[in-house]
Image (cartoon, rainbow, N blue to C red):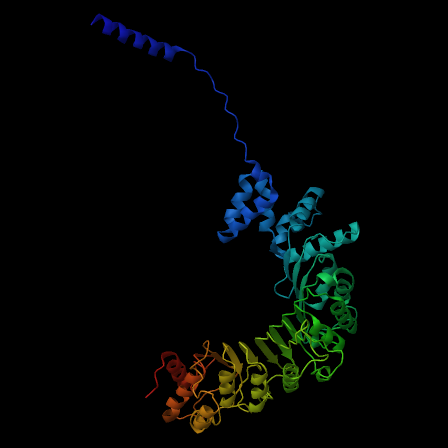
Length: 505
């Protein structure tokens, strides 16, 4: 027992001594970030993954660590609108000149912008955006700098022709994509030289070998100057294989068309000119003609001439004869075709759609791989010369077609449907073409009407089942049908019958 008491007493004494003994302060080394976070490329890869979450996550990442600040902020400022930049210079709200510190901050954030949207159209332009542009222009003139956006790649500009005076202070030599949309009003008076800033940018600022996309939505009523047209032509002729999209609203020389035909990466072309038929037999015509073009948009008063041009390029052998190194490709990848009349040619008194059923047949034979076709502009007249047979032609000869907007005359709609599916039934089977094009199609076709006309004057209630059967064989849906008004009931029944596959009684 005595021994046990002695052991217990010794343990109690040691515990008290441990409590009374002064505690030693341990030196804790501060946690150091891993050296991997010193590599800027890795930080930017991490920031890129926050794109799938939200912008708030990227902001938190910029605030959590000094190393992440610039990669995260540069990611947040890749794409901006002009009015969002006014907050960087609060002095413009009080009509005070910015101090050097404010201007340096603005320049830092502006250096990260690669995509910029500028909207100076009436009703959209704000006082702050105008003051900001004035400040940028004055700084551009005083310091003789190229631009405050040294890394700008893509510029989208909306406004009137008078707003182009700010353009040279925005654009830099790094620009690869330029889209200018000029709006005009009937009472607008266009002064000489108002397109000079745009000409200066095209001639002196843009680097032709780096140009990827050029879109100038300048309608004829905006009076584009001859100098602008010549500047655009010279820019395209000096451009390299990087040019992938070219859209203009005015005519270009045939030498430019020949150059476009030789570009290996051109995927979109919007043309507004007469048909260049003489290029088909030109000895200068490239072997590879529009090899990669996917989208072709035509604004022309002679669409049939363009159809002959396309058909001739597809069917005719190119000149010079192709070799095994230069394959003959003519519209080999074209999948989308839009055809519009000139802006001033509208359906005011009658339908201006000039094509016929044989014209549609020519187009469908030349481009069997079409996926989207838009022909004409909406109107309220039933005077066109295309019929239901054109719908049948597109559906049978273009099995990949998903979207179709077209005019067709509905005066004899019931007779046309019966002639296609009943009168031609024996011949179509003998020619190897199915009478029902919905069988064997690789995708469903969505039909959109280019005119908003009722069925009542031309289709009786007893013929409704024939109409539903005919459209069901052509299309899976019909968009743009009149859904209100005194003469819209039959269209509603047809649309319902197509979607439900139930014939009306």
